[in-house]
Length: 72
Image (cartoon, rainbow, N blue to C red; front, side, top):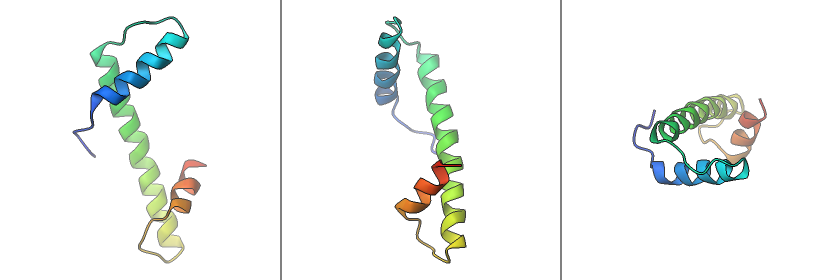
C-alpha cells in the first residue's frame, strides 16, 4: 500500500463536502482517515482489475478492467 499520499488534496475535498452540510473545518485526523479509507478502496479495485485482466488473458490492466472492478 502507498504510504505517502498527499493530504492537501484530500483536505480540500473534505472541506468542500463539509461546506455543503455546514461544517467549516476538517481535523487532520479526519483527513488522514479519509486517506486510509481511499487507499484501502483503491487497493481492492486494483486487485479486482488485475484479476479481470488475467481472466482476459492479458498482463496489462486496461481502463475497462478498472471500470469493471468499480462496478462490483
